[in-house]
Length: 346
Figure: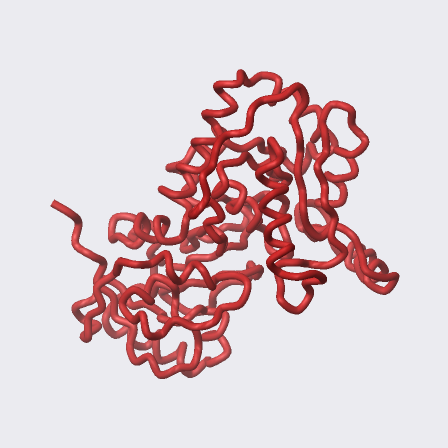
């Protein structure tokens, strides 16, 4: 017998903000333009994962129906939600995507978020996958054949358009240290170390601006996307490093294509880490050992047989589809058994 759907109450839907993605299966007419991240994700939710009830007393949880990024700008709205949760002794499910690691101030909240540091993860926070497109959805994917030296790929922003950008970058570094340094710094460090090594083959396509944003992309979007996908498919491993937030969208897109991330771990919690053995299909490099990136990759790669290399690629794709695509992730986590572990204690 299947477990019953989670019963949620969300109140009125009269705000102009985007709904959380999994609620769109209940309200398909409310799909909207999300921009670069989240647009395709809307269509992954073809079946309702929750049952909407009209009486909060009958709900398992209250749900903030809008992304917290917008809802936090309306304190009155949040206060009303808090009061309702207190009145009915319910916790509130909150979805907070993006780069921020700040605490959600809404009381009684269980928070799904992208960005956080493992050492700072709060008891009520659940790390969710990035808003990553399933790039392998309509493709025939085949594992790469193992070669002599590992081919390390990267296509993306790692340089500057002008002197002012470079100066702003170095000024920011004065106030940052350790894993909190901006992702661009870690990215450039790893790329330079890999370039200098004869243990690996590099397949780098360096951009001077961020191609993931419609405002900063410097070439045709379709061309940029095609080059990005081809770079991942044409590499044995792809360098994946945090961005402004402490997570990597690229990490999940690489998995979606059945390829292996070379993951620079800046104290990054990963989704469903108690259910997924990530080290079976990623190469993980702790930030404290970043200088060893080339030797670690080469040693790991040489230790795999051709069959093992293919198995890991197939497992990467399967894990993304079954656990880390957002519809699969929320199907696993929007249950009473899962959520009760994160309920705030008054």
